[in-house]
Length: 335
Image (tube, rainbow, N blue to C red; front, side, top):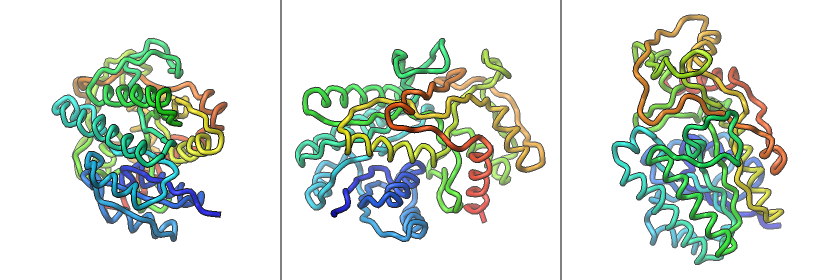
């Protein structure tokens, strides 16, 4: 029996590399494209070393229509897991045009190539940012979308495009609105280490622990939350990767479209994260409070029942798993 061939766009990134490992572990044939703007070529070797399997890699930009067409022409792709995108809220406020170009135009280029080559199955990497500020927590999939920054708008627009093609072109899609990925693979070989400067909380805390920064900046101490700092639903990247496999199996086997929130259902504040790292380290992490950042919301965590009912997903790992694995990767990476 021939293995199903799965294309992962953005496959050398933080989430992409972990999803690639899950796909290989589940005996899919893997293809990866990435322009390496925010990741490193060495990630390919790490994935192959961990999985003990080889796969095809194409260093191309998701907007390169000719190159994308060639990938589809040379392979027999069954489904696409689309992750290739820019993902910084603060950066999107500075250069929204680039975000619309990569995240929206890139999606259209991909969808056109899929249509031209008869590929109907898509997993789309969306985000909880599409919800914006929600008065009612936890957030369900029925909540209205209220994107508040260019990055969020690109994800919301992407969802609308896909929804339209589901109706008009019989596309079969799993749209995953995931919350805050955290943690790393237990090998310590792959984790969250982008080429660009980023604003994610856990890598910033790790910079202080490793001595790259003197103090961790907590943006906002006056939110209406349990301790005044922002509250987020952090989900271990391995749990999140497993959710992608379950979603993929649903569209391949049952031909069922779905839009799901992927998280743990638990909200942790920034101070909760600091305390979790301090518990692992046995020492205090120096931190100061700064003004809120534009585009940030007070709290955001999900209701998990629909993901459990539709694809059988439930997160297994907790905040301690996320913190300890992230620390293991950071120490290994900096060694």
